[in-house]
Length: 498
Ligand SMILES: [Zn+2]
Image (cartoon, rainbow, N blue to C red; front, side, top):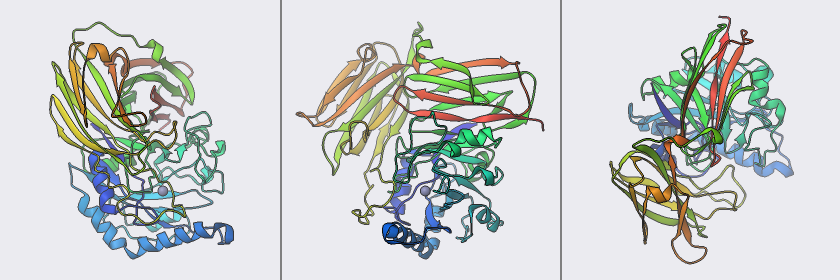
């Protein structure tokens, strides 16, 4: 089994978003294993048009018609982008629903028709000839305002629920990433925890819900899937079986099992449970909580992690770059080389221009996110890349990009970094003491930082035996939080009387 990362809910100019479909696919290939690009298709109970909401109603109806008129071409472009074992695509489209909450269809069929049904559940039924699921998303909006309605939830039709996206985090009232979009605040009646409390059994996914054609945009949500192979059938089967988890941005790698059954499994209840957890994070692990029936069962803190003496170790170097004051884009040309060490892995954290819904002042622009963020070269001692960043919209809303390089080495291992006109060299012994920063030019110019972490602080594994107060219907899930704010929510294992 391998873990694959994707984005199965995001938008572009095929409906009322921005940016070309082809560019969205190119961007997705750069940092994802699989994706779907979702067309907004319908809103059966759309509010009646009046002066106050004329713009809203009009851009939706225009977008739905655009998708309808180009559906064959959209489907064919997505079909052609699917290359088994390399990059996987799915067909998808979305229904808004004031009463039942928004859902998107995800299908393996390149013949998937656009069907106009009265509600999400009927849409699933009306597509009876096609392999598909329907996924509720941004579920925590106010009831009646496009939040989920748990009374109508069906886990056969919806084995997974989107728990995080650009809209925010829907897990519980206590989760970070509250809702701040124009659609309104997060409501405790419609959270993931409320659904689980009511006995609904489902798995967690995240996706960006990006509206300007940048699937996988860093920090906006991704789905992780444990699958046999990188094929459409294998990844869909894994999603349908719920073997998924949600991440915000960093590709946190997690294996969580109860009685040897992976996250998302529904297994026979036992009196004694064997729980195992393996995590490889991408930054300092701040906290891991293993929950049993939504109550903390094990809590692991940053303060529990210690540097262990060993001959060589692994490190993660994060080169984060951006800042400055450019609104049109600043181009980066970077090269990272390692002496007396070896590069094991490289991860990109690229973002697109952030758009969540059309506004009156935005014009159609196919190239809004044609940013050319990409790795140029990757070997055991060298990585080069190009990228484009704009200024951060506020000091607490970063639009920086980053490259994470995992290396094997020791304190003498040397990092040589070229970032445009700047060249700097550090030994790991220096970097490990704390973050180093560098500015490209005078005050307010672009800048970059280097963070170096030893594996003792980003890897964790443990196992436990739980034989206290156990009953059928128990379930266990995991939350992982890094110091940089990036998170993962690992789907529950449910122990039922089968
Ligand atoms: Zn959407």
